[in-house]
Image (cartoon, rainbow, N blue to C red):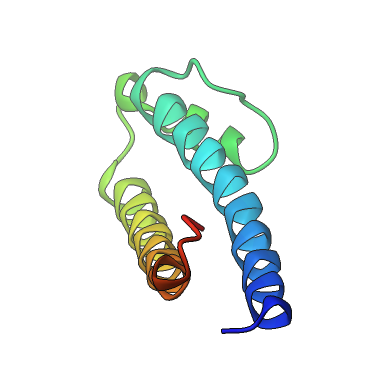
Length: 94
């Protein structure tokens, strides 16, 4: 792998890590809202706050949505791991 390829791969990894940071913070907020209504109760999170464990509303739909989102995050993490593995033989930790 030459320097240009390594640089391009780093840019892809950095962009994906930025996305993942936001996704992980967002899902964390939604889980807090669903659990206790103590996250950031605005935007997409408002529905989770309104339907939290203490509301008496059905929970399966909301939990399933979060599980789907968590699976997508895990898939993206696996893709980053694979990209980082390409850098390891060059001595670059990624």
